[in-house]
Image (cartoon, rainbow, N blue to C red; front, side):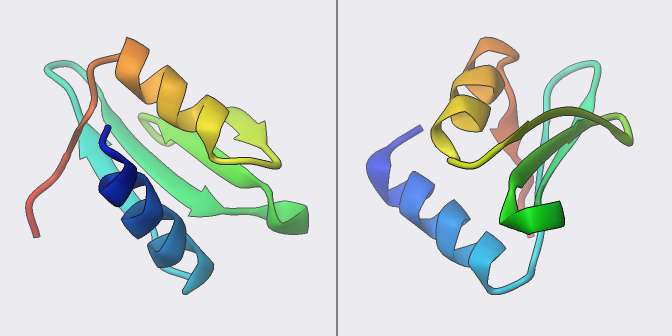
Length: 70
């Protein structure tokens, strides 16, 4: 993901919204969870929770996730 996209995702999450992504087999949701951790859900199950957004973005890249159009 590009830096501009990363900043946009981070700002969206800090505003209390969620970000939805997909790949050919799965749906992903990123949200700000307990203790203000960034959380990544895959098919409605949390698979990663971290203090920073970078590990989640790395995981999404590995899974070939794309941002859904609004």
